[in-house]
Image (tube, rainbow, N blue to C red; front, side, top):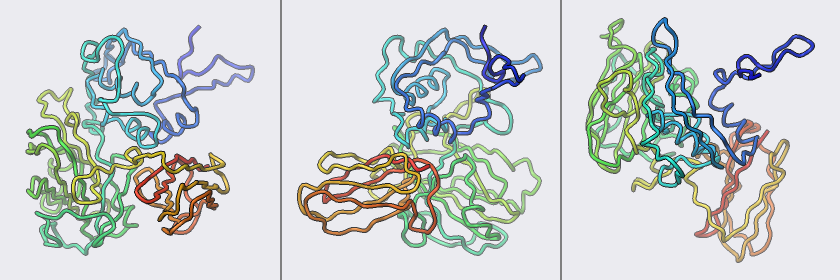
Length: 406
């Protein structure tokens, strides 16, 4: 007899059900469990999908009659999302799993055996509640210091039409990754109120096209794409208007590299926002997919070089690197061997690509070296449990190793 996940296992002598209700899992839980499981092979029952509830009659059933199988769990979820007519970059656990190194979310690196995705795809309706109408907000930004604000966001604080800031320079933060579609500036700035804040990122588009800018905010907000102001909302003049909440507007984006700047004014207490750049779709049941192939990233050099976090760190074999014990609970030994004397640095970065521990840059001789890390960050205190990347830079070469802290 089959037992559903929410229903749990058959009754034990104590009369207690042991259920596994995946609907209550958050993104980090899904990724952490997958990391711990050390997955070798995945089989996905893609026979039937229950669409989101639209009427009192319950759920609509979409039958795919398909089984997915493969060794890469991220690639399988990528394919599963596309089969439902969704953009995999809109699915939070897919993008986070790729960041920590569980697999690939890149279409050109996924080999499909059997029926092509296009033949198996059936579009699934979007959730029509106020939440979930559009895909995953961009989650990695560099943020400015908070400026003292007034009654609107039209005050001039920087050259907003031309700015292309660099991480950690001129008052901008290192890349910050938010574990939610809600970009919570209030928490980041530790409760500062009556302030103006900026958030900046780049994005690449495969072609020049019209797109829809989707926004979720209740505070005064202005947005620039490629230096052109494309959205302005004054929370004071529109208090209580229908303009509050989810908003959409047509914008033009260029082929290749684009800039995106958001300016937010805190007036009522919570100045979070959500933002995505979506395909133009007139049917509200399917609207809200991020533009296919569009990738947000943080540009560290100002030249268009992509840097999106852990998944984009280049690995080379010229210098060995090992971290043990792994997972680490009290300390980690970082061991590496150099072929020759060379300028060397060792850093620990988090999921967003932010350096949380640096062991300095110095000339190290050829041979075996070992560093003992007590799991403390540069900012004091023990780092949080989770996945990190240890990066060794030796001259022109770079090597990285995934490290789990518990």
